[in-house]
Amino acid sequence: MTVKIITDSLGDIPPEAVQELGITVIPINVIFGRINYRDGVDLTTEQFYDKLASSKIFPTTIVPSLGRYADAYDKVAEETGDILVITNSHRLSASYETALLAKERMNKKCRVEVVDSLSTILAQGLIVMAAARAARDGARLDKVLELTRHNIPRAHTRMAFDTLEYLRRGGRIGKARTFLGTVLKISPILGIRNGEVYPFAREHSRARAIEYLYEFADGFTRIDGIGVEDATTPDEADELTQRLQSRFPDVTIYRAKVSPGVGVHVGPRVLGVAVLGDRD
Image: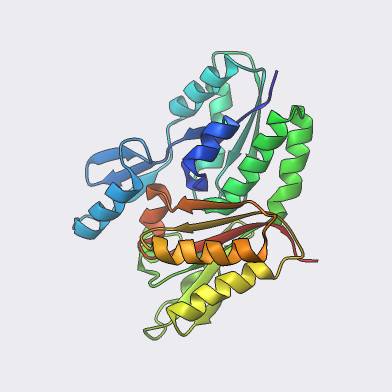
């Protein structure tokens, strides 16, 4: 039987890739006041950012329940005896711990392996998609596990911000706290290091920040995949995608939107690039 891949919605995998590769995505809960929305199910990306701009309530996120994970496992177990679950970094959410505990709640007998991607957004998504392609091509679970663990340190991301207020409020700012209180009109560049948010640069304009993202991707010697995503600035993301595609004509470049589950913590006007590859 084909290995099946499960992940959470924080990986921002484009819907067409989810469908093509047969990935099961468990949506994160986005909370506005007393209303609970399932990321990408009850609340689209466009609806979320409209609501974020108009609402006086600051949203929060909650990982899905043990029962929801266990139900997903049982459903997928009807199709296969081998499941690989790849989660968001344990330093950014409780997805990994919940996914592990849910194995004990399953009703069906199935081998379930859970791996912490130590990533988020499309860096996590690139790891998941690589695993799903290997599974689709016939790799057994141990081989898909080996590939995934090999790819985790090869997945890198950088995001250009206009403000760090959403990260601060959401408690996900990590070592980027050093950027708080800097002068206006500085565009922070953040990424993930060792599973948590990390500050990498401060650019003096939005244009320079976007150029940094391009140069970041251009610095890899081998690339197996690139992802570009935006929250509310599609023109910027499309232009950056076109530049990268011209630079790397043989590399698949995924175009995605920053999902509500991520948008709660990064806010609008964030622009990100993820690369699965090597620098040496």
